[in-house]
Image (tube, helix red, strand yellow):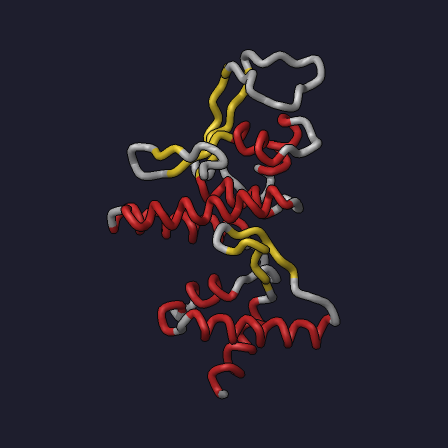
Length: 207
């Protein structure tokens, strides 16, 4: 069942209109305020989203006070961008649309060319690096890629390493590690200080 329309550009990029996503999620905030806040989560214009000027935008279900539907801005979101926005919605509809986007991407990958899949992978890494830019905000995947170790560990290995990092973090700080939005993780992705992952990786190797 199609929840919202996912378009595909000539170069294989899947996109969603921000107003379509807004209408589905039904946030209480006005669209113009909501979209600015959502795009503030490390998302970059002309890479993760594109702006169309002077659009007739009469399809918003939530009316904006004293504003018409003409000469407005429309935002075209890449599918990764739309998933990132969906991840920060704390609602049943947010969970539902995240699951839908993941399924759409799976269907695309089933028929995509190797080059299109590589392009998706490249965009995923770029988005991951933009969202996790701080010394204390390193994901397991980013640590492994930066150190050319990602291909040497299985998914199960990476999960074990993540559990070890979480255990160490809890012991040191008596709280759960920070989570950041990520297009491949519905509930977000744990991040840790670089040195903590480095120490955990050394411990994990010796087991």
